[in-house]
Image (cartoon, one colour):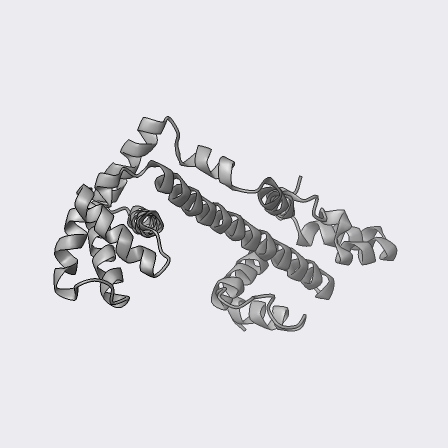
Length: 245
């Protein structure tokens, strides 16, 4: 029997893989196989310890991914909030012109043939156009500032998505705005991320997880006697590489 097949057979004895939706079952099998190859379990007690070790290591890897994802999401959220405050009107004027024209057409207020010209003049802060647009919006109980803020938020979201994909234009613009404000992404994350969320993930990643002697399998071994304790130490000789402090 090959080592890989033997490893899969061994971990199948202890139930299904502890793999959740979206995780790679093949990666779990590979981890199990490599641990088995390193430890070379000699009997079922060794195999129990290997199964415990691999399951715990897989859980730690999962929590690390979760922590990374949480930080990434928080960074983008914080960056969007920052841009909504820092974006100058000139950066979303054209988008506002388009959005205003579409809104007026959709709500059928004013002369539909004159909407584009009216929206353009309003976007460029023409006093007469502003007054006319405000009067039209009053009919449907909407305010120009509300529409402008919506456009600003949309532009901020667009820039954040482009920044996350590392598009040069968005990266240059956002880096410039961050530098002008004297902050960076890390500062924004700290300001935005609720401390209890990060602390919770941190505890899950670095919690005082069971060391070798505290594993359920080793608890059983300790009741058997010193010789089995030696088997425990042998089977999990690589356990110390997993730093649970």
